Length: 85
Image (cartoon, rainbow, N blue to C red; front, side, top):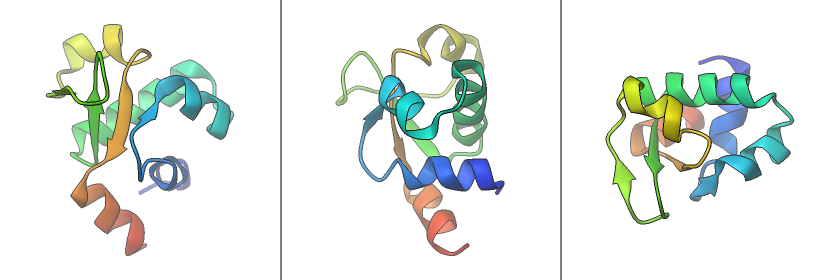
């Protein structure tokens, strides 16, 4: 896990919208979306759209269109990896 991924997971103990993550991390939107996609592909995150109660299965083909409108939460595996680092 990279430092950037670790820092991002640190913000995702609760469901958090993309816009809030932009503010908290200070990362450019494209870089943040790339990090989120990588963590989703590893199974370390869950993502929700159009509301915080509707979880989507990660599919790279649809993530690009929805990623900036979604909310995110660390998965159980993501929390375990974050806490054991």
